[in-house]
Length: 164
Image (cartoon, rainbow, N blue to C red; front, side, top):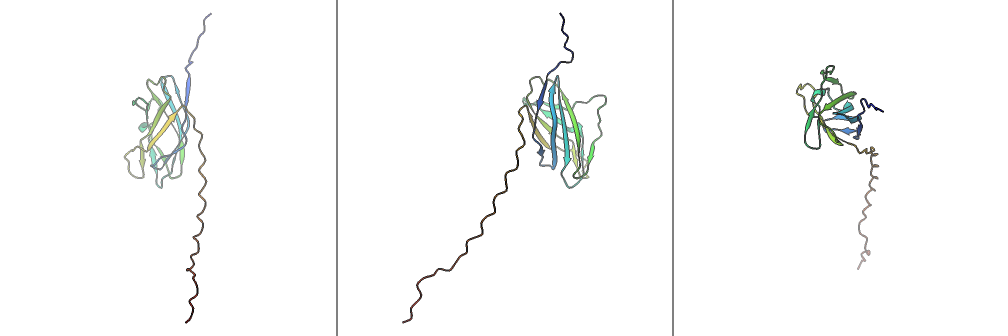
């Protein structure tokens, strides 16, 4: 008996909570996983700044726990034109990284290649930590109760002065 297992590589899911980067770029990981010699990361990115941004996927990279940094993988049909995002606009931005990723259970997505406003220089927008441990988004803590009004201050009262 011969059993053929074609294309049977396991898939390891990676997770990250939605992240507001300090640069004003919002990143939501919609799906990320390790399969074979690649790590696939599908995101939805929104421009939360006051001006336009350009997102060049070629500026993305992935830092592995051992310190190696994998550049974005590029293939025959890879799009190299940056995505233009007006303030408040978001879109899907998908990237993959190729390398020796056997056993990887965590990584850091380096969100680079982002140009802000009229400055054409691509910059690092921030980092998003990925891991095999799913952490449910936590609700925002309730607003603190309003402070009580200050107590009314009354002048001290003492015995009435008696007349001689």
